[in-house]
Image 1 (cartoon, rainbow, N blue to C red):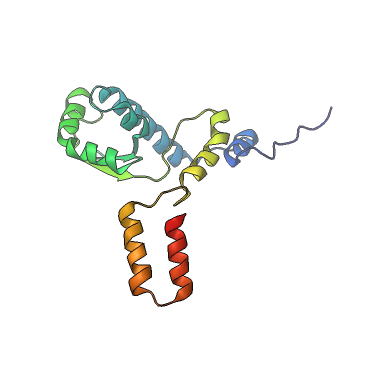
Image 2: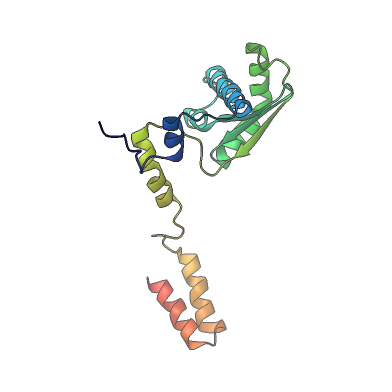
Length: 171
């Protein structure tokens, strides 16, 4: 019988799970608490929040008086902030866990935590990389082209810069 070789392409967490390692107890306890709170919030606020916001909403901090939620966009954060008193009231009335809450704090994260299957996890990094390429295939507005053209013709004295600006407008 041959010795089983580890999968070199697997993620670190997969290697650790295969090796039998685990998170430190305090971290595992916090993760369990936050996951349970997240699931409870998603159940309680299913009628209040749109699905897009619910899917990106995670509990990242919880004390007896303050709940900290993470969301993936400023729009979602603003939506929750605008109605947070109503959401706070719903949580306090419908859940024992959140009865003593006084504040809801919202943080925006760049890359949201997503529950994905292993096949989706391999595709996730390429998707995120494609989404973060700045200025790719963006067309200049007419106003921007006009401003650049005026700067090139009337302000710039350097011929190379003038030619580069005019080429930028044409592309």
